View (tube, rainbow, N blue to C red):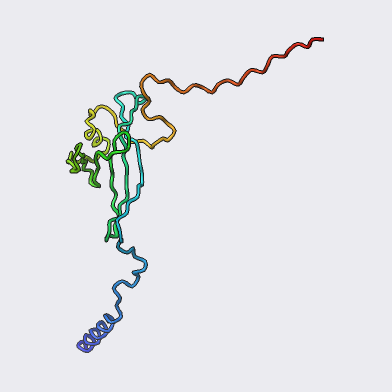
Amino acid sequence: MTRRMAVLAAIFTASCSDSANYYGEEWSPYYEHPREETSRKRVDSKEIVYWATNPKDKKRIGFYETWEVKLKGSRQTRECHYIKDSGGLTIIGFVSNEGVFYRFEPGSSTPRKIDEYQILSTGLKVFFGIPIRENVDLEDIDPYRVANPPAGTREPAAAPAPPAPPAEKPDKK
């Protein structure tokens, strides 16, 4: 009796695992297909500002940009973090996703590894050669503020006062 039950259970189990009706990617239209070309998009851009002791003396020393890169033939997206100079034109280094800082030497396209830092502000201090006791921060870019005004410039003058009404002329009769 138990032998018959075991045989029936084996036949029943075998009938449930039919491989003829199996489709590997039954919902493939819902999956993202491998990319046909490499593309990238800027996600975020911040100013790197530096000050020694007084936060009112902030000075822009660079930009920190985050880009989203989609490589050809891949389904995954990677984030890249670039460090640009204070003018925002030249890439002077980058940070990997693991927190490793790299710097491009002038005239070279090969990056030089600096070190790995878990705290971004500490890594930026070492990258720019700033003492640890001084301050570095990332700030949102304010398009209406002059970044580093030249020394000796004044604050913008207030709007001119409206002209005085003309004086009344006495009537001669």
